[in-house]
Length: 346
Image 1 (cartoon, rainbow, N blue to C red):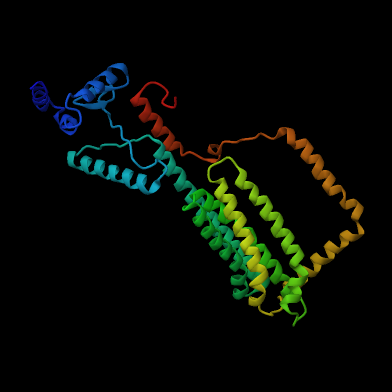
Image 2 (cartoon, helix red, strand yellow):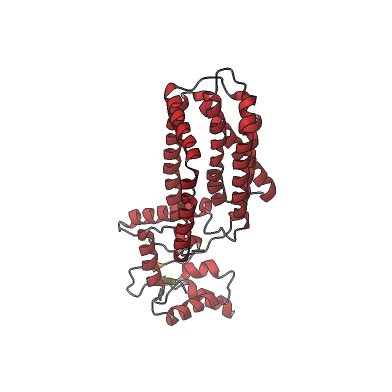
């Protein structure tokens, strides 16, 4: 009878909408008492009609938790958009300019993701356009361009397949950086096609491949070994990144050795490419006559390394790579200041 009486009394109060939602799970109405105690302990909060407000009464404070991770943009972005749409509709209904401000890890995660996506689009477009224009300038063949990109495409496909078979899913950061690292494999097919186009007309591709196989294997092996070191990093996603890059580069190298020679067209290089290649070959050959002075280069590199090593500042926190939007930071600070005068980061 006392429980029913308490419920009846609460229903007639302005906070009845809150009580109606929780009465089934909290028949003793302990939760409203906890809210009152919390607001009395915190000078930055006031409880009015079952709703947290700032001391001035100009800001209503709502605390939410999601089942999905704050880093899961597929859930967080629709949620924030839906809340903003509801606030806009309520503002139009009341005829008052209501302003929604929020704080939370999800806001920073979405802001960083949007920033990364924008930068990746520009970097991808600029690098792809530069590579294509430079390639066409020296080869003047669309087919040669497609053949050059084939090892990279196959490397990404095979690496993603192996990663999905091993992990079940792939980390977005690992995929983004892993695909970029696999991009080094385009050098192998370009190197092979360059020598083939500069060779005397009618030279079989097998002859060019036999001559370049040691250098291609050496370049691919050193790259695979260096990328495999990423798999031993302590950061989340680095293991997947190292695996994707290692498998992708190795697969691209095999495609270059086994598939690309059969797809190359016996087409002589343009005259401009031949002149530049001749000048470069003469310049490199001149090193043979100046071997001793060339020893100064590794010595200079060693001295620079010894001078710079003590000045290296090691940073093992990936958050240092993130650029936070000042507007999001300022909004986060305003909301948390209204919630509690204490430092929320603690």
